[in-house]
Image 1 (tube, rainbow, N blue to C red):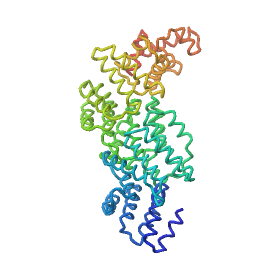
Image 2 (cartoon, rainbow, N blue to C red; image 1 turned 120 degrees about the horizontal axis):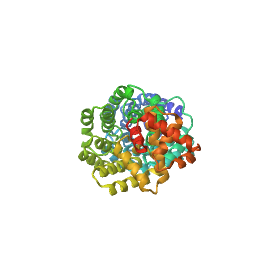
Image 3 (tube, rainbow, N blue to C red; image 1 turned 30 degrees about the vertical axis):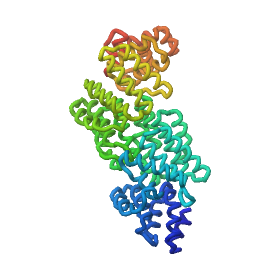
Length: 491
């Protein structure tokens, strides 16, 4: 295909060459023939043609030349806003969410009126790619990317198919459909050497797996996915930047103090401005504030977090911010953060986080019944996709609330037991003082299981269970089951 395009400049027919470029530029861009595409533009008989300039602007953006992209875009915008090339150039280059959303709406109309000289499969992918980043309608983003994948398959375009499926997996993750997202990720073909577009996106599949691992409470697994794709000095506006954010939160959850400074340095490399409709500064601030709190510098945490309350549009960040403010004892700002999270469509995992925070705030406020109602709603939303992270905070309020909820009785008894066992695994992983079997027993101590039930559950003799319990008490310096759970969480 690129050979056929390459032969066109020799013809000298500017109108014909413009048609060929218009038909193939998006595909060449997605398939990462970026350098070749820009050379074709420069060799065009009319290199100052608005369409040629706009195509070059997209090339510059994909290879990381933001200034060049801005200048060429400005020179090329001498065409109608509903022009196909102008519309899809703006879809790629518009930075703030309101502008990008307005362009996406125009792109839908342009897509419905695609002519024979327009690249429908690539345009369909780019619209779905945009909707994923806008996060305004996860179902629409999923549908667009499914359709783009089908078109690419039917037209035998394997690279567009791979990109569509990869972005579909992230759209499913955003919607909280982790199981289906993992199935799509598992079916992706092995990626060749990273292309221009892969570098532009920044490690999407592994960043996606890291996000899922984080929300499922597998913080060590998250770091294993995220560490290899982080490159210090990268653009700070793509999935590599998202990996930095989730790495920061995972380091906090694992209490890896030896990594705090290095992780803060990585967060400083995340953009302070919007890109592709993503409010990067808000996300960066919330993760950095969590790290400051984990390091014991609550004043710095408040300083970092404050500007994040000034704008909406980042529901996951505001859900995490609400929990941070709760831990800081600032109920008023926690409530404001919860309100901001609720003002935008929330993915399932953010909703679970806000419900756990609301439950803890109600418990502290003396509204026990309301606290248990919120917790039950959180368990209800979390159970289908095994969302554990919001329940794993070491905070005593959540620990006591979960313990009381287990004794109170819940329709989510099995999933609640999973939560309690994962809390035990995390606390013992952090403390590192227990044997593997002691960790299993400690996990059971968080539930309502009796000694005999623990014996049956773990497949060990009852006297052995008692021996492990005595060892756990000794290591923690406690004499009761309740105190053992509290002491383990405090480590």
